[in-house]
Amino acid sequence: MSGHDHHHHHDHEHDNHFTPIEARVKALESLMVEKGYVDPSALDAIIDTYETKIGPRNGARVVAKAWSDPAYAARLKADGTAAVAELGYGGRGGEHIVVCFNTPEEHNLIVCTLCSCYPWPVLGLPPVWYKSPPYRAKAVIDPRGTLADFGVSLPAGQRIRVWDSTAETRFIVIPMRPEGTEGWSEDELAAIVSRDSMIGVGLPSPEDRP
Amino acid sequence: MNSAHDLGGQMGFGPVVPEKDEPIFHADWERKVLAINVAAGAMGAWTIDGIRHARESLPPAQYLSSSYYQIWLAALDKVLVEQGFLSKEELVSGVAGSTRREPKRVLKGEEVPTVLRRGFPYEREAPAPARFKVGDKVRTIVMHPQHHTRLPRYARGKEGVVELVTGCHVFPDTGAHGAPETAQWLYTVVFAGPELWGRDADPTSSVSIEAWESYLEPA
Image (cartoon, rainbow over all chains, first blue to last red; front, side, top):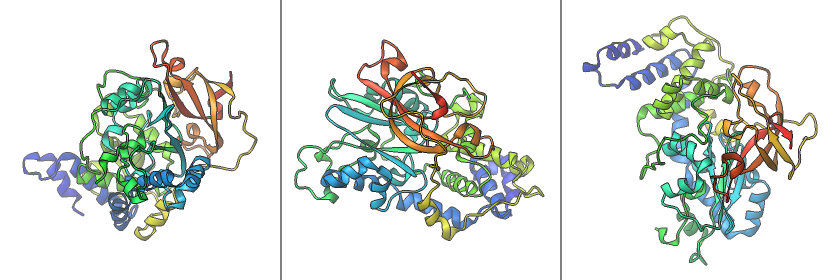
């Protein structure tokens, strides 16, 4: 294995084309593979899944269907996990899904103050800001100020409901369908649903139509 | 435990700063850390709460000055050594020595889509009826345990209302530390903003947590 080279490089920064953390991760990967703890093809398959197969477009399809099909919206409310599975999504990081519908009276916001829990099967991997101290600290104590950091301002009378993901339940927000989207197809609707609007820090707009 | 990870309500971190057109990964090593973490977890030697505990028990200064995947890497190194899969010397040198523990299983590449799609459901058969029902007023207990818990500090000793009975779920506080798996009823408990944050709180805000039954008492 090339582990010895990594050690050498680590001690001699000047002739090192790996940063210290790159060298550490390469050394760990080599050890795990050499000892038979991980299969290199599994690493490739995991990366491929989260880079090319799973992301917020999945969640956007859930939202677009909820907007277009009242019966589906009712099933989402009754059992989010099962209704999301109807579209083929679920599994790791989304074993138990609860769907939060925005209304004119109440806006929903998702956070994980203790770590980074996030509905991977419908939204993909979380962005850096979601996992960072500013968001995790502020979302629960100052939700309106948090929304302001994203340029979102809600009517004063609209309550804000924050969901802290302290268990394996994962949450996805169904934003309100914006006016001006009457007659749009599910594909057209899905195109204006952003990751941020499904966390609750954004609002969809018909002007976002591609 | 009361560590740096328990961030809800802390101040001084400044505004949230979203990155425009953020990539899924910012460096190739982040991809690898994610993948090794998922694959190593599949060996079955620790639970999701076990690895969370490893992350949150990093020294506060290290936790707060590390990027998220740096935290994951440090915790993974720690559990691999604690669980006898690798030695510290191996991690430092990158050279495989004689330290070895036979994993319960190794995730094969061709199994990845099925295993990720199936996930690891945390709901269990309920041994007894739920103690609380939707609409019940409850109070969270006050505790400051040295061990892992999923009851955040800001929500301890607070009165709230049960809004959902989620099911009977694996209990993290003991499972994180290698004890045999147990399960408890899990509830969505919603608190009014002023109950959590006092009179200056936004009166139109509320926050819910997912609370296991032993975190709750009738109010």
